[in-house]
Every structure is written in structure tokens, then in C-alpha cells.
Length: 133
Image 1 (cartoon, rainbow, N blue to C red):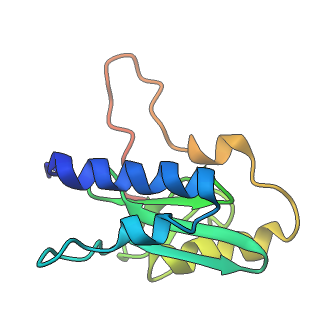
Image 2 (cartoon, one colour; image 1 turned 90 degrees about the vertical axis):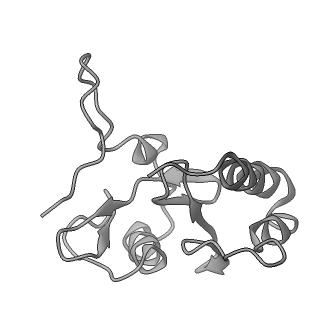
Image 3 (tube, helix red, strand yellow; image 1 turned 45 degrees about the vertical axis):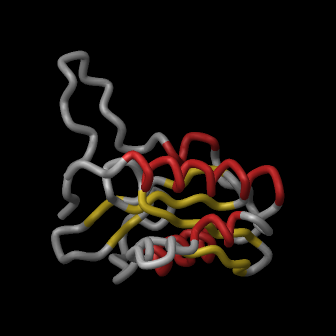
């Protein structure tokens, strides 16, 4: 699926603004333009003292951040989502999966490597996006 450049730029702008302003302007950037569809993966909330941000990535799939650090989301065969933090419980939505990861983390910081989980190191360009069973 090809994502229009405008949607991708708006998503990346929201991420950058949220990272630098603590989320105050990020919520404005996540709103749908007048007459346009809302981002189906958008969320921005505080949960257990952590800032959770979600939006549609360049490939149309969900992209999630915990306190500004990326958290990889994996689509399951049952239609749910899992994260590298909580790999055993399939959650119905990206937000539920990010909340489950925060529940598992407790007060520990999110590893900088949590956003890279599942990326391909295949030099032939193998797809990093698989469906987890």
C-alpha cells in the first residue's frame, strides 16, 4: 500500500513536534485535516507516567513511541498486535499492545533497541514486516 506523501509528512511532523514539545503540539498535528479521514492508528496519552504516541507509519501500519523512543509493533495472525516487551499476549489494538508493554516495563526505561526488533539484516532486502503467528 502506498501512503500519500502528505500523510507520511504529517505523521513525521507529529513525531518531531511531540519529541520537542512534550506532546502539546503533537496532538494538534495528529488531528485529521478538514474533510479528511482520521489516522486509524493515532493516539497520544499519558499512561502510568509514560507518554504513549501512536500514528500511521510510512507503510500504513502502526508506529508507536514510549517516552519518545520507538517501540516495534508486530501484527499477529489473529489480527492483534504484540511488542518485543510482551511477546506472548496478542492485544486487539496498537494502543492496547503499547499499554501491555508499559505494564511489563514498570519503571524500567525502554531499550533503544526495542524499535529495531524484527528489522531485516538480509543484504538481499528481505522484508522486515512478517506476520507473527
